[in-house]
Length: 92
Image (cartoon, one colour):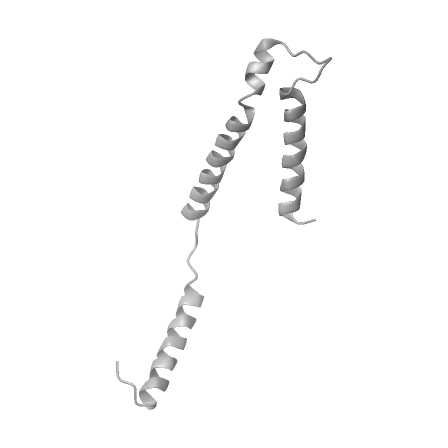
């Protein structure tokens, strides 16, 4: 199962549990404080997921390392391509 499938299964499970509690089926009466905390729960989870995503992107950006070997190899490819184009008569 892919990671997307795992996330979708987890969201479906949480969503169905939330809907079952928030819609208050007959025979299940939640106390008012629990119901007031339960109704905006998806919004809170969405905000928490956004904060987690921003923190993850910020951390990965702060710890991004340079690839000096790949940069040197790319410069070699560029110079070889320029030399080939000069040989064929193209001027820069």
